[in-house]
Amino acid sequence: MAEQVPPSPPEEEPKAESQVAEPKPAEGEKAEPPAAAAKAKPKGAEAPGKAPEPEPAPEPEPVPEPEPIPEPETPAPPLPEGKHYIWGTGRRKMAVARVRIRPGTGQFVVNKREANDYFQHPRDREAIRSPLHLASMVRGWDVWVNVVGGGYTGQAGAVVLGLARALSRAMPEVESTLRDHGLLTRDARMKERKKPGQPGARKRFQFSKR
Image 1: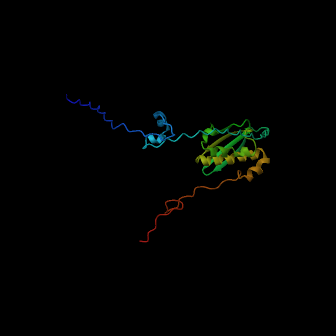
Image 2 (image 1 turned 180 degrees about the vertical axis):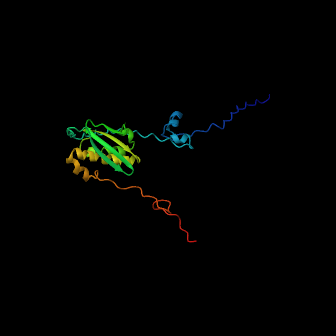
Image 3 (image 1 turned 90 degrees about the vertical axis):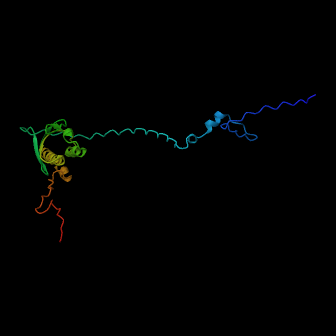
């Protein structure tokens, strides 16, 4: 009788290269499911080349603006009989302003336009009303101004001097206050003239010995 050859064991299929043996947990430790392990990874581990996006900063809370404190208003005195306006003339640089005032509600017109429309810079807007603020009569007088010459800064200075002169004539008691703040003093500063043989008032051409 021929000897019976035992059947050979089935060949095991080769594991794919992509399948990597997972490390076995040590004794006493519980094995984490694959979904939990993926969640435990930090954000930067998935894309090492990209930096983590910064969190948006919290928006600051809006600060409420303080309410302006109303200034005490002094009523304007009535004009003398036969007078409809009080005039004042101011000059600054090349600008000349003719100012007329009368008791009213605080209207301020410059060359037939509202003062805030005519003067765009906040510095000029505050300057032309400084005599009224010092006299505490911002809403006590109506002001009309005709100003010519110069630029906006020179015209604003001319309006200040003309308005201060008109207020001092209407109310002699505020003249000392206006004079102490320099509003009744004519600013004599002007642009210096060009000199012959020079490119400007002080500048000179380059000197060469040879």
